[in-house]
Length: 327
Ligand code: SF4
Ligand code: MG
Image (cartoon, rainbow, N blue to C red; front, side):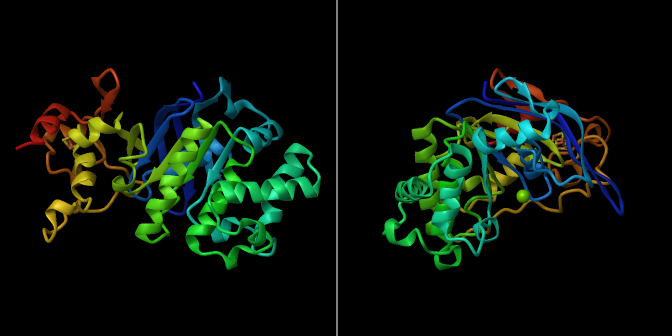
């Protein structure tokens, strides 16, 4: 087991009261496995990842419960210094916006090289050679020349490749990619996602892929965890989800992906908005938006029901949801 998050709880103090951003999230990622964490913005997917990375802005954010086990160690019990060591070599993060994640006044070669100087004690010259090698590895054309260029001299897609190179430099066991392709054009998105998937297999790293777009994960993820209002509402192998979702929210996300065979048809959109996290609806938090909601949903909070050995759904009516699919 590479990473196991157990019953994680995170709160934020806001002017409107306490925002319950993460409310008992549990998930696990094995070596060589890709977990896609899916949900709208504000569902808690990024906050959970930031807690794992140990980069949650605190305060106002506060972890109020749970465990984060990385290679068997509870990260929440480690000193900041030990945490930093793991963050350097054990796990790395890829952000959506490479331009703000990279330093604008340092050449990409120096930024990549710095990793080897600081963490591996390499000479500047050897580190530069490693930087070129990494840039070639993520297929940046003319890497030996471009190693001296600054981030703004690269296209969005190339910059995202540089971020991937930075994340993989020390060959971490776990990489967390938070909306890694969201800012890119659709064709470039697919190229960057393919590259990430290829490197993930090659390095046999665990990958957590955070996205709001179910369309980008089908070919890449092994498992999907769907988040809503700070909870996991469905967790399953990717093929099970595409075959038949066991939660109405997952189904809404699936139905809102554009499909080639339905050209011209109006796209389904889940009605309403995600809840205010300072005031999460009682019962099932999805009930105000759910087309299948019954009275019980307004009062009784659904646990994560066991749909199969490898699948869970937090819907009282998961059976109906599964079987509705083909009608
Ligand atoms: Fe919809 Fe009820 Fe299921 Fe919640 S528990 S997703 S409201 S049917
Ligand atoms: Mg986010």
